[in-house]
Image 1 (spheres, rainbow, N blue to C red):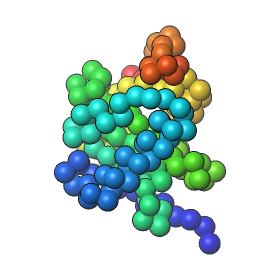
Image 2 (cartoon, rainbow, N blue to C red):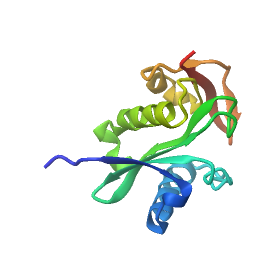
Image 3 (cartoon, rainbow, N blue to C red):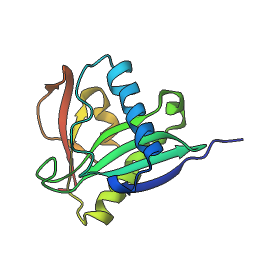
Image 4 (tube, helix red, strand yellow):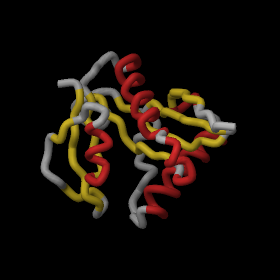
Length: 151
């Protein structure tokens, strides 16, 4: 039987303790452990964000956070885009980006979105109509590039 993912977007205060723990665990698993990058993931921005949760069998396996214009970048933004390693073969990253973009457009009523993308994912984000708007820069010793959509 094919695995199904269910999507939700929640404010910080709508997250259950279990959901908060699970999303922080996923982010730490990928961004700190898998990518071998010591950085401050809990950055005091989660409370401002909208949280896109992708659940499979009640486990959070896909996640992103959404910000209104001015809360992170000048424009609305998407960040902490992550798929659990065991589910990457499902291509749910594309569904996650669709959910995030639609969330920005409906919640914040804008089509202008800025992201700070890991450079190796540039082509992935280009398939979602993001275009590079900066040279490569290091963020936590990982090559990144600023990309924008909706201009």
